Length: 169
Image (cartoon, rainbow, N blue to C red; front, side):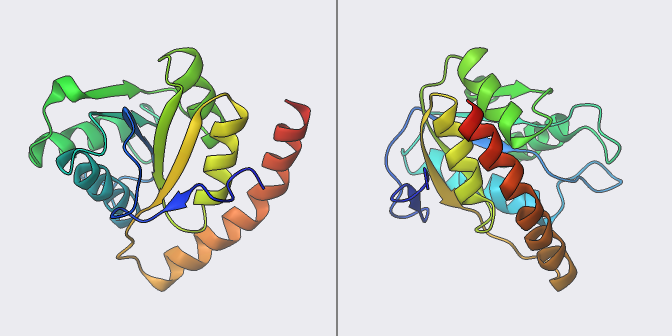
């Protein structure tokens, strides 16, 4: 698959200009839930270690669970990331859209995409298919068992659709 050889942990990640953080559910109070917090924490770690200089947060700015972009931006600011280092895409409504828009609208051609282990292969493959020399870094997940099961099932169902999109590209 397109992601083979392009998956890392935070410590072994290559140096890139940008970290892409796809959105996920936010809590009713607007804070990131565990899944999203894990992605953001790794992005913060990558910027602090000098492995990236910017972060692109991409998700649904008008989602039913809340404004993912505001949630991510506020979390990053609260953890010391300068707002000038954060770019936002409030219309990254899917992983494919996030990758396509990162390349087309933001001119990103080299990046790390941070997401959970089951999503990394698909996210990397979709970004690479959209012209981004992308590597994936596995995010933390201090998640409940039901969250892990739900997201594993979601990924299992999403993989064939992504493969079809890549082959048609």
